[in-house]
Image: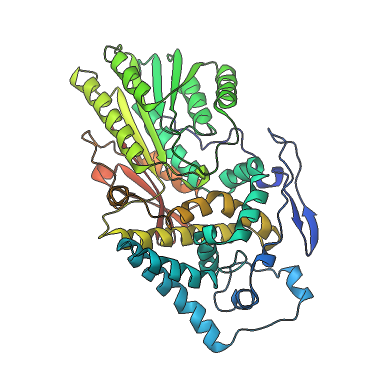
Amino acid sequence: MEMMHPPSWSYSSLDEIGFHVLDMDSGSANFGSSSSFFSPPILRIVNPSSLCTTEETESSSPSMPSREASIDVSSLEKPLVFPREDMELDYELSIPHLLNACGEAMESQNTHLVEVILRRLKEKACPRGSAAQRLVYYLIQSLDEDFDYLMQEARKNYEAAFRAFYQIFPYGRFAHFVANSSILEAVPEDAEIIRIVDFDMGEGVQWPPLIAALGNQHRGVRQIQIVSVKIEDFNSMPSFQNFEKTKERLCEHASSSGVQLEVGEVDMEGLVSEMNKMENCGRREMLAFNCMAGLPHMGRHRSSRHVEEFLKIAQESIGLRNWNGFRNNGVITFGDGQTMSDYRGFGSFFEAQLGRATALLESMEGQISSHLKEARIAMECLFVAPYVSSLACFENPEERDWRGMLPPKVGLNAWRMSRDTVAEAKELVREGDSLYWIGTEGESENQVVLCFLGTPLVRVSSWS
């Protein structure tokens, strides 16, 4: 089977994003054109160095060196100050120890101790520092009045930042490509109608490549239906497009691919009703459930309980079709950006997720040149900070327990990822030429994992 190429619709390359970075110390710099699908707003952001204390600025780098090879011009305007040996040791060791202590205090629900530790960590936080210092900065953002201003400035450029983040970094493109490939491989040759239920459609960037591939490879497909589940349970960054605009763009793309597309939206209760109506659907109809949760580009958090509820509905719907004799006419794809595992408790879960966030920050730092540091910080504020800061919140203990577990066991057959899918995923992340690598895990190797150095960042699994 001819495999689907990685997503290429509605995203532009880095030099087409049209970022115009305003650095209040060193003046402005810009690059690229503004000829992309959207008209990106100018990226204007306050110089983050003004948000660091003297101690933080002094210690931000020789102790924990950055991957940036070039020198920040603004630093030449100030005398160089080197940290003392004891200061370097302090920043090497104290941040990890304080973070571990914070996780243990959160696990024991010792609110006072958590507040004391966060105040101590705040002294070491800096948005222009090392990955550890930036991690701490985003973790304690709720205690930092200056952060709100930095976030507000970044939000003014959400559309351009989203497009740049999705195109530059492989997290979302990897997850969408692997999930789409699994859906495409599960489509029966005689299928005429493809029904897709999407847990969090957002900007809709996952579906154009699949629509185009279905139009090219499955000429018998007459209609594609996409149902987006509407859940108002997150209070972080919303989609930069509303549902109607996303729907319009998807339908226009489907029309150009020669495919009839219907896009709808339901809440969780409405989804149950829709699935009950589909019990007697025909043999030439294929049903796919897609759930993406906690991926970095999403910039928002969905309740773990809603994820579990969605996957339960998906399992029951696919299982019922199988019981009625429609074997292999359904598939579930699950992209997990929190890379859950079997942790001993919330403390170990907290520590592991901070390690993942640190890896994200390091990978972003390695792919953005130093003269675009302000653009990188803006993207970190929008797409990394919401997840990191959510870890500092005291959640319902039951919610915590679920987040520390493996994804719910899906009582269906594991859908083995094909060698072609794994090979193309490796090509997408430039394995061998970058610090990213791809692995396979799970029952019958039904999981593909994106890792940065030794840290898993995204897992995508599938069942049928």
